Amino acid sequence: MNTVALISALGLACVMVVTVVFAVYYYSNMESDMRFRAKTTTEFFADYTSQNYSGYYQSCINYAESFEDRNAMELQFINTAGRIVASSYGKWVAQSPATSDVQDAISNRGIASYVGQDPNTGERIMAVSSPMIYSNGEVIGVLRYVTSTKLLDLQILVVALSALAICVATVLVVLLSSNYFIRSILLPVAEITEKAKRIAGGGYGVQIQTKYNDEIGDLAETINEMSSKISQNEKMQSEFISSLSHELRTPLTAITGWSETLLASDDLDQDARRGMQIIHREAQRLTELVVELLDFTRLQDGRLTLNVEPADLRSEFEDTVYMYGTRLRQEGITLNYQDSSDDFPDIPCDPKRMRQVFLNILDNAAKHGGEGKQVDAAIAYTGKEVVIQIRDFGPGIPLDELPLVKKKFYKGSSKARGSGIGLAVCDEIVEMHGGTLTLENAPGGGTLVTVRLPATQ
Image (tube, rainbow, N blue to C red):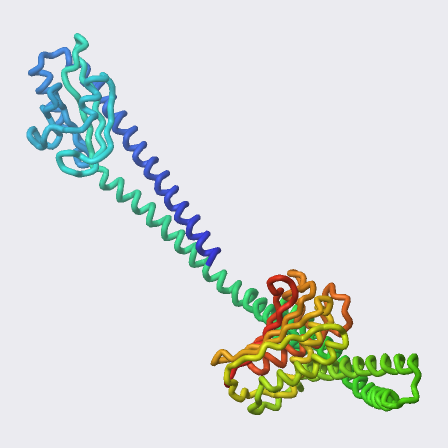
């Protein structure tokens, strides 16, 4: 459309220029011809100006009656009062002319011309007047040629229409060539771009249907090959992570179990107990990391599913807050819970997965905002959705990192431990519930995480 609009604008400009050029050319040629006629005829009548006025008048009538080009233009002889005294169309053929060329010729004693509308008839005309000067130097009248510009204007119109037809034909050619260009290049490129975006968004293995044997086809084949290889690599990576995670769970379970057993014993001295507590805590952290990796592989493979059932989401959230609050108190962090007086209906959700989301958000609040020594948690029901908010009082998230924090493996400038996939898994779980998970910097400092879940699905 931009190309067609530009070509159309240029074409119309060319039509206007061509029309103006031809109009100026035709009008100037006609005026030059009439001026030449007026000059030569005036010089011819110079021999008659020595006669008396009656003889001169009769000479004008005789010349006007014998004028051969009367079909193309009118020859007029006009006295100084502006009245026609002889005409090639007859003695009383028209009113006295009211155009400016007559008086200009008399007052300036030179040839004058006029192009425009005849005040008497309303017709567009061209007139050229030449003064008739008597032997004593007195102007005794005006010789005037006048003609209609109708045929001339018609010729200019034909030129304009011809130029316009060429312009329209050019635009049609541009349209046809653009249509071919769009079908042969732009549409395939648009299709390749759309598939490339899907691949970039994680749709590995997507193939582009190629039907071209040119550079476009080569590009599509290259992207297909790249997509296939990325898909194979992703599959191998997911299988490796899944296999490794399953292999790690067995020894981690043993380590966690034996550490708990030893910690329950009274035979450990203080240093051994402190070391066993570290072993137990780190084993739990590794177990959580393994669970995140397993969820990540399920997310990548599309195997992350929900077991949806009506559940008391407020109770699930409260249990998570109270359970995690004990752990936060051991780290010197206060967890404030703001209950809601609203009556909560049972919400269709996967309670296990939602507890996973709550725990992960609380854990992030402790890791990244723990220096604020306070975490606020609240839940509310608006009638259409359940809103859960968790806020820490840490340094917050840099503005340039806010759009990226939910991406897989993204940790940004944070020095806190973690894999960078927990929040991505949580975001996917919330989206599978039809809700949203948003992060923003809270007024006064810290990070505010808001989870919104629809009350019905």
